[in-house]
Length: 488
Image (cartoon, rainbow, N blue to C red; front, side, top):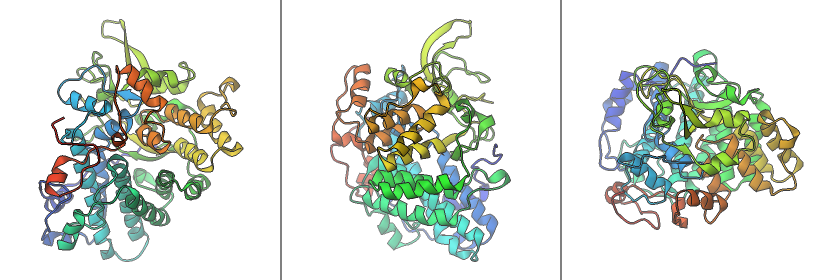
């Protein structure tokens, strides 16, 4: 079922957010704002729906899912690299892939700005939700805002570790001071997220009717909660949260892996939460153009692709069957040029969608889906017949031939991580997975991509990105270990 509603921010909300999120050198170091319009804006159900649209809309920003999150959370790992173009802004992307970024890297800075923009939008809603009368709608609004804030904070904690943890909007001196309070590592952030998601999963409905399929559900809250608990090393709590998703009966693996992708398959039975796009009014998705080969004309569009987020050779070799549906739907190694010739090029296919204009396609970005839940459940319960069965359940959808069954005599965590790699390829899970499994520093994944790129050096500090320099200079935040100043 497709959703006709994008995360489109109405003009009224834009005016309010412009006042609330006024310009400042440091994004989290906000001056207290006297904003009489806020007290009168948040009164009706429509007002809160408008504000929620703004909180969802921040998921589409350049610094979040539309561009930078795939750089920070997919390309940082061994699945993809920058591709052949390494000039201009592309060079800034390549530096992140090669562990050579500095504290002034534009992509890191923009991700910080846009992630905290989303957090502030959620905080405003949570501050004002008490204006609503008690009831299901109030619960739903609070649950949606808690889920979205948790999603933003999860990405911030994975990316930077020690961050500013804001749970109130910046409207007075106390909140301004809170903006400068930096956590000691990611632990307090995960504690806040897990508590918020436990609350959210009890407030949110299990599903929605009609055009509200884009909204966060209790299943989305529990799926993200399971991921957070695994990151915290709390496997038992993760199992409880993930079992709630399974027991809900709301989700199932779609019959064919190919049927997960494309505008015609948006918000399907396997999808738990998606970033929504629609090809009008600047609300389209850029992925078709961004990931297509540089010399290939994009079907239905004008011009050529950017060839970014290119699958690596080790990624291709991770697939057990290059003729199988997972490989065929996920990536390719050649394309047909305009003159009819076949040209070699590795590129992502999951996000192909006929664009109505350049960087204005219709396809969504799946953030959470049921296959991820099943594999996280296998991780939570650990080596056991049940866990092996869960891995086989996911694999059998694409590789039903018994010759591809999981080798249960092999290393459990190695096989689980490899299954996650090929099942969830190019969905922004790889870097968090490698960190959670402690398989990147001095590991096979790093060695393979290092060999392909001609030799890389990496240290433990590379597990985190640098805090943007302006946050250090203006807000007084402590820089992550290992990073000096510089301009890259």
